[in-house]
Image (tube, rainbow, N blue to C red):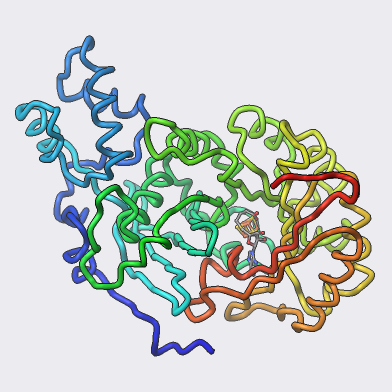
Length: 411
Ligand code: SAH
Ligand code: SF4
């Protein structure tokens, strides 16, 4: 089925050199900082820094905004409505660099994974690295992005949880993942091939959905993630619909209503167990915020309706949480909450004590969920050959869509 030899992989300079209009590597232009990914306030401050008069700031920000987020420019030269002098001043002080690509992998099924290196901060011994994954599907293109380097939580089945948190990502670094992915898949108006003859067919090029399901707990980096999603959803820029942005959380209960009220994206909950004893073990933050409190926060999530359901993620762990009794308990637990259930085959990593449930067990489990009124279109695992995404990808999941028996839900 999958053949590792078919994996196309490119590294470092070759990739960077071939990329469409690729800016120079970060390390080669150390004194200039990238302003790609900044919010309007951030761009305004940057322009003020180089002496743009106060009364021009708003107009200049709007110009930059459109070039950066609508056109995807990676240099200032082509900004034709910006004066030559200002373009030069911008270029002297700043860049439009994306995060540096350490490696890019392309699966035989089109899934792409990038290992990205972020600029080193003062105290950091080495430059932190994160992963971003793009999954093309027939009806959508989903980008899975990271919100932190590592994670402070230590869910026992998660590889990221074994890594020491290096730091929160800045808002611009979160947005930068979207810009980089759009560069690499040719998802800008009039974009040419990124230079390595591996451009996707145009039908597969569009990033329509963003999921915060990469590395990190996004609600522990609330302000930066919110700022980044506001940039992503800005109608004059990247224009992603908030209904197509999903934040996944391990269940930081006090932040859930705040996120709903202030950011208003779709929500996914990493549930994984139906009783506290097991969830305490799998998702230890459960000791602080137990299942009952978590589900209460879900019931009250702003905007929740049959058309705006919460996704419950449930990783299938052999002999741990995959029995028929578990399936029945799951259905019972979620009854009354407009929900989708995402059964995720466990993605093993070196040293883990867990195994993925067998296919039959997953099917049996899914059947119970179906019989309770949930539809379950079974999706083929994607990107297996490149171990897509942090071991955590939606793409590797069997998606079961919850349908309230009585409701005529539109989705
Ligand atoms: N920290 C957030 C978002 C990142 S994890 C959260 O926990 O929700 C995204 C999803 O991948 C979560 O549902 C997580 O439980 C799941 N996951 C983590 N490690 C996994 C693995 N090895 N196999 C399958 N899913 C995994
Ligand atoms: Fe962190 Fe999410 Fe992994 Fe848990 S599953 S350790 S919260 S990234």
